[in-house]
Structure formats: structure tokens, C-alpha cells
Image (cartoon, rainbow, N blue to C red):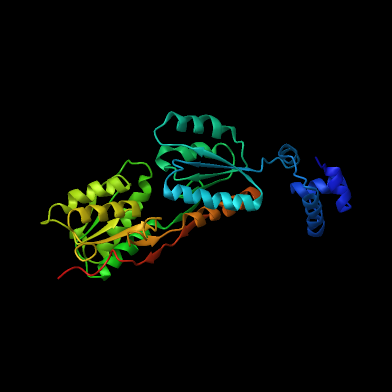
Length: 334
């Protein structure tokens, strides 16, 4: 195995300079750093993680904690995080903290408390659970993807705006009887649901449609959206002409329920979602697009900035959503 001495000799510098160039600890000119890195690449030399940690006091590892790894949003966020960390030459440790499990408590009380990372990206942690407050005591920079911004830096879409824009799209088509479907107080990730519900209510109120406001609670899944919509749409006397789904999965569930009830979308019912889920185009769903991979990459940028400058002020980055119009929305029937 090639050693640091051989890299230094190839680059024409001292071992100490070669070490600084590869570890990032201490000043080295850009030209010298490039020469040392080129020599290391030619020789196939890979710095020891332990040696770099000893030299810099850093682990070169970023922790990521999220409640799910197999759901669309979280998988996409993780992809964006991983790509950015690979580019930066950093390791990733993933903590799958499923809500309501003993494993989640152990992750927070034991594994995360050890602080074996230079910084942490927390995805979709509920502030009401006091979990972020618990993590801030570890003394490492933390960036939240989805959050309130009260305890950490935050990268997220503007959920209020997304739901408001979705509702305004339906109102602009001429709909008045518009229901909001999905989400329930007390459910995990409920603050996102509540922000989106608030955006829907704002749009309805501003259009003078407060009397038509209806929230149909459901699990934030396709089956949840299907069950809630089937119950709502089954009564023709109180059936709305349009639905805003708290997310695309709920909206797609509602479209499936409508089809099974013989309700044509969009001629008899318009449906809007939020996310631009991987299935949205297949169901021709009009939606407010968010790009989770971009949120993951942005979170890495913010976190690395805070690691480099511990005194840096917290950042709140709210990313606007873009309306994608497909074939699930139209003017209401005469």
C-alpha cells in the first residue's frame, strides 16, 4: 500500500505539507494542494480516515436521520444527500428511525448521542416530539429538511404556498366547492399537513369561500386517500367538485376512488396534489412540484457551511413549488 511519504516525494513536498493538503488541516496553496492530490491519485493513495480525524478533529462523516427510507420523498432526499456527500468526499451514516418503535428511541438516546459525525441532517422530525431539542445538545451542526426553523437551519418547500397555489388553480377554473383531503392532527409529520391545510384555508377565505371549507382527515398514503375519498364522494348530495390532496399519494388514492365510483376525472371531479410524486404523471395528476433531491443537496451545502463556520447564523431556506398542470383538473361541469 502506498504511503504518505511516497505521495510527498512524488509531489516534491514534505510529508507534513502532503498531509495538510490531503486532510484540509492548515494552509496549503491551491497549486500545491492540486499537485499533492494528483500525486495521490497517480499512486492510488487513500488517506486513512482515522489519520484525517486525528489531524483535523473531524470524522468526515455526516449523519442522516429520517423516519422512513422506503417512501418516495425520503428516498429522493437521501439520493440528493448522498450525491452531494460523495462529491465532497464525505461518508454518510444513515439512521432509520421509524416512528413509534423502540429502535427510534435507542437511536436518539444512544447512537446519535455519541456524536460520531461532524454534522447531522434531520429529515421530517416532528418538533412536538422534542427530538431536535434533544439533538441540539450534542453540540454538532444540524440542518432539518422539513421543520419550523426554531432550533436548527431548515431546508424545505413552502408548504403553505404550495397548498394555496393548488387551491387558487381550482378557484381560477371556476370551482367553489373544494375540499381538502388528507392529514390528521397528532399524526407523524403533522405540522406539514397543518401548513398545507392552512394554505388551502387562506386561499378559500381570500376568495370569499369560507363557507365551503372542508377538511377530510386521512392517513397520508394512497390507501388513506382512497378510503377518505370513497366515503366523501359516495354521497352525491354533498360531493365537492374538486379536491386538494395534502400530497400526491392521497390525491392519487382519491382519483382511484372516484374512478371506482364512476366519477370521471376531471369532467365530474378535479383533483390537485402536492409533490410531483413518481406516479403523478402516470395518473395525469396536476400537482405542485417539489424536488426532494434538490432539498437534500441544499441541506448538505448549508450543513457544510455551518461545519466550516460554527458561528454562522442559522439558515431558513423555503423553496417555492411549481404548478404542473396535467389532465386531472378542468372547469366544473355546468
